Amino acid sequence: MNDMALLLWARGPGLQIALVVFIAGMLLKLFEIFSLGRKKDLSTPRPGKAWSGLKTIFSRSLPDKTLLKRSFPTYLMGYTFHIGFFIALLFLAPHIELFRNTTGLGWPALPGALVDGISLLTIVALLLMLGYRLYHPVKRFLSTFDDYASWALTMAPLLSGYLAFHHLLLPYTQMLALHILSVELLLVCMPFTKLFHTVSLFISRWYNGDALGHKGARL
Amino acid sequence: MSDEQSLGALLREQGISRRGFLKFCGAMASLMALPGSMVPAIAAALDKALRPSVIWLSFQECTGCTESLTRSHSPTLEGLILNAISLDYHHTLQAASGEAAEAAREAAMKQFFGKYLLIVDGSIPTKDGGVYSTIAGVSNLDMLHEAAKGAAAIVAVGTCAAFGGLPHANPNPTGAVAVSDIIRDKPIINVSGCPPIPVVITGVLAHYLTFGTLPELDDLGRPKAFYGESIHDRCYRRPFYDQGKFAKTFDDEGARNGWCLFELGCKGPTTFNACATTKWNQGTSFPIESGHGCLGCSEPNFWDAGSFYHALSTPITPVGRAAAVAAAAGIVGGAAIAMHNRHVKAAARSGHQTVTVNDLEQASGETK
Image (tube, rainbow over all chains, first blue to last red; front, side):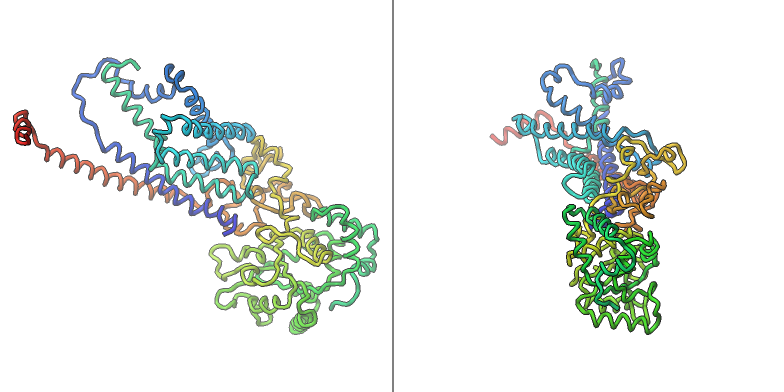
């Protein structure tokens, strides 16, 4: 199989397979979570409960003062990675073109050089995060295969995209094919690894916020 | 027929000055990324080179490759070099026809066995015994096998001969394949493009005449000197790509300002060819300069690479239906899991046994 054939497979059948597994897998997991149900709380909710779930979805994205002081590197690298990842994903012109083509929605792109710099920062942040995870005894103790696999699955599209953009290591066509394939692998694995948090975080935050609000905790 | 006249003598006969000849050799050296010190060596070798015998077979093709080469910018040295080679058989260009033409091919194949250069344009249909394209009653498949036997090397001119091209595109009704899919035991140079740049083929010929060997090839068998860099990397609109300035339609402000054509489907990033540097029509321009994105014509399967007008980063097949099927499958599967979970919960509830303190005391008393 030559580079072009690989690229065409990635842009055609590969994408179809990945999307099918991704969409079916995500829906399956969501159904599973929602169908578990919760015991009915018979206690009277405290006043001010109404928006606590929704509020928590957003408020949990902000750093907690005490925790920020105690694990500053985790916060710094975590923010850098997440924000950088979304900028690279959503504001590089070829990516926007993909969204426009598949969903009909489009928006202006950021200059390639800016996205490039941010991507590099993101890659560095991810590398540091892995280093920190391996260095910190508690983090290392708590880490499972899922954590390392999720790291690799996230790193692959970033790194291959960066290398493709700069025409490094492999011929561009081949690197672009690998980049698309790595994204497809990410999509396939997303429902079945901790990467599912892209969706489940909203559910768990809402649930926690709502439960705490019910008890009258100040959020 | 080939005679013993050297290439240099032939060119002088046609009124080419020494200066003009050296300029050509210099241009060839620079195109093939050879050092300047090689120019005299190229000149000496080309000057003395005897007219090589060339057999040109046109198979399942549109004659665009021949048109590109012969009508390119004559009369120039490229054209004359092409004329200077002994084109023993080329059914578009030769005067002879019918049996006389075939006889000329057979005679050349016999006389120069093991030495002639075989140029092929067009793909080779293989389905149903190769009946879809025949010349003088002989299928292209048989003719290629026969002609390849005595060839010193084969030059596959054009994307059809190099990779199958248009006839190879889905659903490929004739079972069209490239030369390299059939001939495995001869050196093959792929000069891809639809059509290829004229100077590329003369460059390859000049290299062959100078060194007696094939130029360095990439993994698709194309001369690296011409196919080493992508159109995108050499494109004069590249700065606009880097700045994120794109033409959205063919007549918007971006198009008028000459911005990048990526969003209009330009395949420059994955296309390796010399268009952006050597250009076409005596260096006038190349497609992107005329406001149209690169089609990627020098790459394999470019006809099956999705729309010419959709960006490289988009799917080549619609994904809507697959997504809908997946959503339906996910919902059905999820509902099944939900039902199963409810069943497990209900079973646990109904199987629940109430235990009193007395029961427990009794139980602990028994174990004592």
